Structure formats: structure tokens, C-alpha cells
Length: 193
Length: 232
Image (cartoon, rainbow over all chains, first blue to last red; front, side, top):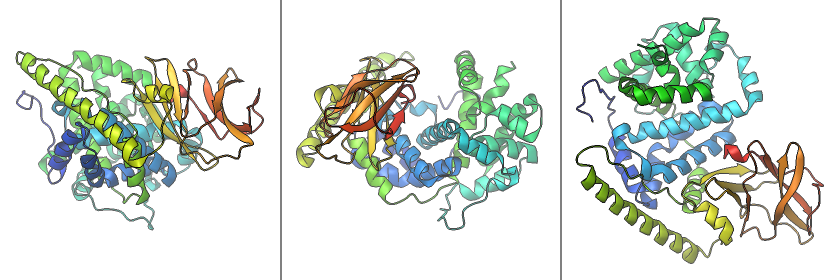
């Protein structure tokens, strides 16, 4: 499938390959590999869950749900459909966003924060400098402000695109397009990195 | 390019409502370039997510591993796409069979070496059902339950072994709440065995309360947990 015209996957470096190999073993019921997989991606899963749901306890619950889903569905993971780590991060994001949307009270709370304040990090927290960190930050800087805000409000705050349109006071069609061209720019930049 | 196509970015960011997401997924089925684009945009989004890595609390790993030990894996899907399909299919089946054997052996090991909780047969049936959906939920009295549902068996089961033990004068009672009316769905007389019950109708809630031994006709205390089985 990789040779199909038009298919350009963003290949990461470093531990990405290990995650693929580990998931293959996990798919065969190898619980030791599952422990190693946790060591490889646990911080990424927990960090994203934490970023989206905010509350540490709920982030832990989300992370646990993610790993259970990964364990359960590993035998059905299709490596033709991308990297294992992308699959795991996609599950993480979906579960985290579901958790946020289930809790409307949380959401109302978040709406009081100005968009530019939303990405403040808790100084007490041990942030891991992920291998992706520098490249992602640099590439996000290449986005226009509206692209970046649209992408971040949706991805890190769990807003739907109509909600983002309301928050940023822009037409729906504009936001939907900015999300797409913003991500395309991010993809192209990361591919070049 | 159709209008739907431009939703690929919002879809990759999980920023569509459930209905729109399903509509877009239907569209992707007919649009190979859309699927590829989503794949690539997902990869970019995933990098953004992974860049937020944060050290998880140390206890989380043990919780995750213990939970996985009690959770069966789904059997692999048997697919054949192209001319080489037949050969590939046979190999996948063989791997599937091996995985099933491994899972069975792992299950035996768990119960033998840990002498751990033994779920009752109806509860285990739900947890081992191929279409099982399950999730862990904390309770207000400091415990955790694992809830599993199976549409195929039309059953739901609760693994209660991580609930605090009660005195002999008390019992955990399950309730199915339809239209605001709780109806008893059984008592958890043995927390290690758990409890199975018929899958409540869509939109119904399930609650657990602590009741006097023997159970109550109607809940007499605040639920320690309320959940929606359709969300499991």
C-alpha cells in the first residue's frame, strides 16, 4: 500500500518502529510486550489525556481505558492503516474528547478561559520532552494564527468545529477549512522535519 | 472536491458531531483520496498529541496491566483483499488460533498463580464475549468496578472485586433505571463473583446502591455509581 500513488505517510524517527513491533507482539497476547508498550507510549497517552480532560484522576481513567482498548483491539490493528503510535494516539484523543464532552460542566468552565490562555502548563508538572516536541512546536509556528487556534481549540480542548466557529466568531466554512489547511501545513512541515 | 471532503481536517481532530462523523465515514468509504488524507492528517494530529507527553503517576502502570490481565482480546478479523488473499487468510487464521490458545493459557495462569478473583460463570461469559465493550468506573465509596456489555448476549456484567467489602448487614444492589424508575437488577452477594444482568434498554441507566442485607424494593441510599450502559 505504501507504493500506491498519492499515499504519503509521515514517518517518524526513533521509537516509532519499536511501538509497531511491540503492538504486533501484543496482538498475540504477549503481556510482557504490553508492559513494554506502556513504557514506550504511556507518557504520550497520559500527557494527551491530561491536556484534554485537565483533571489528573480523570486523565488516569482515560489512559487506562485507552490501554485496555489497545490490548483488546491489538489483534485487529491493521498496519496498512498507519503507524501503531498514531493508532494509539487516535484512540487516546477520541476517548479524552468523549470524556470532556460527557462532562458539560467542565466545558462551560473552559469557555471562560481566553483561547490564548488555554495552553498554559502547570509549572509543577514534569513535562517530558517528547522526541516530537521540538518539531511540532516549530511546525505549529508556521501556521497562521487562525489555523493554529482552530486546530488547538478542537484538538486540545475538545470543541467541535461549530463550537470553535462560535468561540472565534468566524463562519463555519472558514473554521472547517482552516482546520484542514492548518493540519495539511503541519503534516507537510513535519514530513520535511 | 465535494463539500464533505473539506471536513477531513475537522474529522481528524475529532471535531465533528457523532452524526457528521458517521456521514463523513460513509463518504470515506467511496473516496480513497479522502481516506488517505485523513490518515495523513491523523498522523500529524497524533504528533501534536504525543508532543504533550507527561510522566504518568507510577501506580497507573500496575492498574493498566492488572486490568488487561482480566480482559480478553478480540479475535483478529479475517480479511482478504487481493489475489494473494487466500494464502494470507490462512496465515491469519493460524495466527488467530495461536492467539486464542495464548489467551486461554494466560487466563488459566492468572487464576492459578494468583488464586485471584473468580468471576461467576454468567459474568465471565459477558467479559469473554467477542463483542464485549468494557470500561472501568470509580465509585463514590472509594472502589472501582469494571462494567462489560455484550449486544450479542444481550447481557451486561459488573466485575465488583475492587469494591470495598461490606459488613454482613449490608449488600450492594444493582438497579436498572428506566424513565426515572429504578427497578432492582439483583444483589451482589459475592463481590468477587460480580453480577450479570440483562442489558437494559437504550437510554436506561444502571446504578449501584448499598442496601440492608437482603436488598430493598426501592433504593434507600444514594447510589455509589450511576452509569449508562450504552456508553460502555
